[in-house]
Length: 347
Image (cartoon, rainbow, N blue to C red; front, side):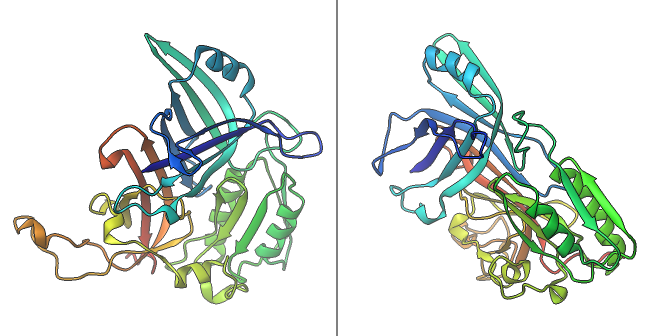
């Protein structure tokens, strides 16, 4: 069955202690599917910070007028966590793929009442926000002391250690990224920092297939920094390293696919899957193994059970789209965008 669990918390106190639970909406009660649960719709985005794509949105249908009015007054600035996936109940459901998909700050709360239908729209800002300014979109203070002869990984470690806010981080980038002049970067957001690092890193390492440094947020609390120069990584054996992820891709089974993967632009393939939480930007996926040569569309349907794509791909963005009541399979999906793991060779 379709699973969701939305938990909303009061803002942290002045000492950074997490707030208490304010409200919870879930499709399960004591591990059993609740057929009377609220209908939820959502559009959740995961992306590389160098190419931001906007905020995530969640819609709750069927709330009471009192709850809607109270939510509009109180929820601004609260912390929200959301778990989605599949629970037991359907033959092909895989409960192990469900988990946390979003942790962020509620930026806007919009209530709407039309006839007998009441809904609450939440605009959520995932990722790092200021730990001192209560405004959800307050700039964060990022200072990167990247001086002459210093590795970029060392400078970023010093930056994130002084960032505050309770964020963890993993840095898996090339040791060849060494500055040849003193340069302190001052940024007010992760997006600004990621854009600068992408340009600077590709200016230092001019290899044909080098992707540059990318930054992504893992469920709102872990900052992931990575590139594809695996031979120059120090943390090759760490399970959080980009090198380890490239050698241990997530296997996509044929039954996980909702539709046929397809090219959406040069070097980028779109892969629609059943709703799942276990794939992040920077992860590697392995397409289903090719069982037989590609069959033409005019062939009998029993022979068209194979994907046109095989091999390993690097995930560049993840989009989770859901409507808990809509019956068709396309209403509860995870759309992955990825490019071939070996990098692109252009002429």
